Image (tube, rainbow over all chains, first blue to last red; front, side):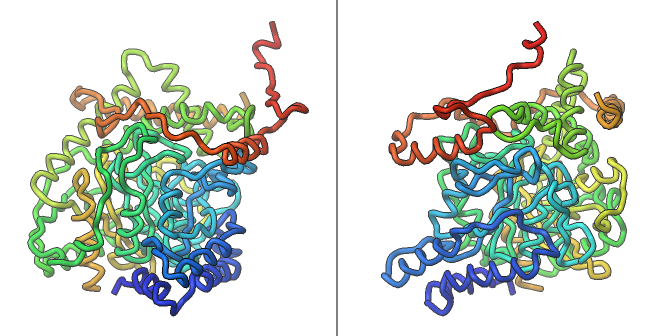
Length: 457
Length: 85
């Protein structure tokens, strides 16, 4: 189980499948299915030409990169030269990227072929995939339900097999949430492991770019490709490159210390929790030691997160004044984007004696300390990703109910640790993802636990 | 400000105030601005971009500009507050 990505790469290298055939098939699937799913905003008109170049290299026996011939979807808040980085907003609907983001450069250098720009929640402000200015995205794994957000197009693309791998971004759960709802694999890397240069940011101290994939090895391969420092990034960990692929299998979860918290059951729908408990039991059977850890203030992270992200987003959007490019954001954006801008403005205006933003940063410290303390006792913490099942597209839910999707994912962003998601099961056919949170630079442990579960499925 | 904006602003303020209430009893700690403390503020000068690539970049950049003059210079609206003076 879970060798789909590597098998395809092998087939391309052996000449059993050409890069052109692979990309052509992806484009055909998109053409056929995406009218209903709406996972892509724009397709790359040069994708086939880029695939032909890979095939020529293979024919000449030249060295090709580790992603050679794979079809890659890119979230629309990342810059890809010549394609529109719309952020799924009317603000940037005509904005054509002038350069490649660092992660896109790295994907292309390894032979990955960008097939198009994925749909998303507008400016990554949303957890449902419904706030895109162009269209909500459907969930191929549970049609009629939200795919989760904000990397909605990425999650849906992988679930429907529209492309091989996707680049998403995660500020408060935007990779993990759609991975859970769509039943695919997603990884939010440690803050500072992957360069954000070329990302149109939502919250600069929280955003990370990461992989969405059909299997753990695909996610590991894409993460290896994009991780590592660059002088063009201002806030980065001192990590040259990472290597996971050769160390994924080994003993699996045997001997690993897995943390669980009673807090998860307090915040989560019992039907979802039942699936998660089953996955924890499976890990125990695979030889992991399950240990209870305390996370007493976990739920306090959510309001603190929304304050911090609003202030950072308000600051980040001041450049969208419609003068040099695009349209003035306040005049054309959707409701949730406007809410965050106005909230950020309100806090920034009233930020005297540290009542709001500074206080939120103190709560961030508290959440970080609790998670770090828990992770001193265990290798990873496992639990639910999203506390409830996805609602139906178009169903009216309150702002606070929408924000509640993020209860269990924002703590990892606040603490800067890594987290991955893998399907644990389903409730009435709707996928439920297990979240595995790891230490700072603990991606290998997270991937190993995910791979052990995948192999045992 | 439109009615829509006023309503959204009200809901935004409510969330802020509910945070203040929820955080009342929590300990006062040192603030965390970034979860990692490795900064690389000064970027080193890299190799200059080749002239051909610079020209392509300029062309792409200009194509995004909402308005430009005959020489390709960006024309921008004068700030509204300045017009009122």
